[in-house]
Each structure stands twice: as structure tokens, then as C-alpha cells.
Length: 259
Image 1 (cartoon, rainbow, N blue to C red):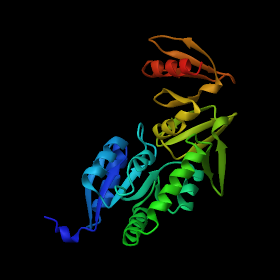
Image 2: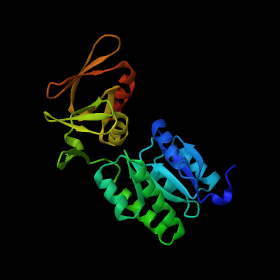
Image 3: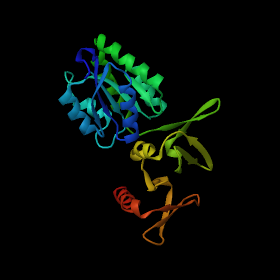
Image 4: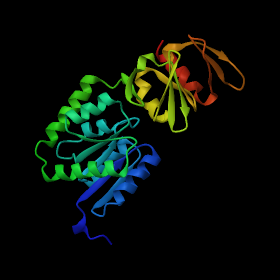
């Protein structure tokens, strides 16, 4: 049994992706002075776990559906808030916001070394908590001002980093653990899953039409019925994609709400 006197950090983890959950838990359990109090699949569970366990530290995914990591922090009173390390796949502009306000973050994908740095920063912050709440309040205010709609995606290509405007993207296809952006006849490969992009781009009216395809609704010219409840999606540039039956109702609902 672990000697409770040796525990320095009680931690709550929240990420809606099971693989990410297991990865974070594994990294935490590699540190003998860390106790994992709860592993949560969404923001609602995280909020309840933080209030129940009163942890020293919470690792919160920023982009969980429903209640995001930022929503969890907003819902907690200053007295309830542990030290926060955000886990994010957001673009560089969001990362800069975290850095400016001195809030720790982990940018997916990250390794054990980078995780150790974030954990060390959290421990340092717990030893000197003065000013921590003010910095978190500043972050929340800054995030509200910038809104939640993602403006750019970053594309790393050899010796340069490109900023691709979300509004310029026509459609996106899955490529294993990567995604391929189709932008006005050009293609860019980014290291991010389609599921992550689907969540990040929802407010920009991008919708999943197939297990391997996301489309910008502003680029859709027409839908034509095919066999077995599927539709052919034709874009303004002539591209033809498939709307599978499993995503049909959600796409039609989005089209109806957008007029």
C-alpha cells in the first residue's frame, strides 16, 4: 500500500479520447509521488471528480464535447480550483494565449519528457500559489474575447510553418493518424486525427460526412441521392464526395439550422 505521506500530488485526468486517457494515466503512474484520484471521459465527470476528491492538479483536455476543459475551470470557484494543466491540440494562437497567461499546457502529441516538464511546473506552482488564480482568470477572459471559432490551422512543412485559414479549407480526409487538408487545389498533411478536427471546426460549420471525410458546408453545391441511403456531395469546384448513411441525419440537421 502506498504511504500517503509520500503522495505530493493528487491528480484528476479528463479527456474524451480513451487512448489519451490511458496515456496520461500511464505517464502519471510512472511518478511515485503522484496519486491518480480519477480518470474522466468528459467535462461533467471532471467537475464532479474535482469537487469530490479536491485534487492538487487537474489535467484537462480543452476540447471535450459538451463541457470543455475551460468550462470546467469556469464552473469551479477559486477555492475549488486545483492547479490546472490544459491538454490541447489547438492551433498556435491558442497556445500563445496559454503561454502569455502562464498557464501550463501539453500540446498533443507530447512525449514523457514534455509531460515531466509540465508536471514539474505544476509542483512548483503548488509550492508558490500566489498569483495562480489571477493568471487563470486572465486566461478565461482572453479566451472569451477571442471566441471559440478556430481561425487557422498550422501546417509544418520542412523548414517552415504555414498558417492555413479555416475558411479557405474545402474538405479534409483522414490519412491514418494524420489528416489531409484540401485547400483550393492544394493539399497539406497535418498530424492530427479527424475526430479532433471535427470537434475543433464544428463552430466553423465543418461537418463529418463519412468516417474518413469532413467537409466545409460553405463549399457544398448540392446533394444527390445514391443507393442504400447514401448521398453524393458535390462541391462548387466539382469535387465529389460521399455522405454515408450514418452521418446523414446530422448533416441534414446542420443544413436546416443554417437555413
